[in-house]
Figure 1: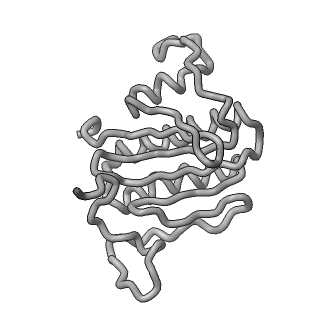
Figure 2: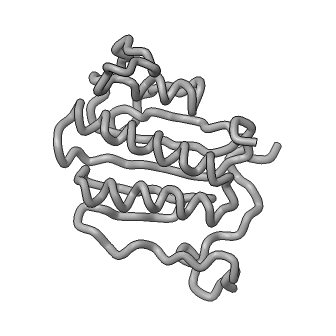
Length: 175
C-alpha cells in the first residue's frame, strides 16, 4: 500500500541532493540563515528546528507558503497552512515562554497539507476559550476556532520532545 504522505512531485532546487538534476520550475532558494533557525528537508516539505523569536517566525511563515507552492500546493491551502503554523507557534510561546525550542514540520500529502508543531511541555494543552469567531469585541481567543475550520480533526499527542499538535488541511476545502 502506498504511503499517503508521499506524492510524486520533484524536490525543490533548494533541497536537491548534490548531483541531482534541477527542476527548472522550482527556483526559490532557502532564506538566509537566521539565529535560532535550522532547516532540513522533509519529504514534500521541510522541518524547522527553532528557538521561538519574531525573526524566526517571520522566516517560517514565508518559507511555509514558498515551499508548499514549490510542491504544487493550492495557494489558498498554503495560506491556510501559514495561518495554522502562526497560530500553533504563537500558542507554544504563550504556553512555554519566549525562545521555546520548537520543531515545525510542513509538507504536502495526498490529503492536502500536514502541519505538525512540537514543543517541550506535554502538560500544557491547547484549550478553547469559548470566544466566537464572529465576536467583533474579541481581541484574542479565536485561534483554536480558526484551527477547527482550517484543519478539522487536529489532535495532540505526546512526542519524544514533549507534545506534538498534528493538523491536516484537506485539499478539497479549497477547490
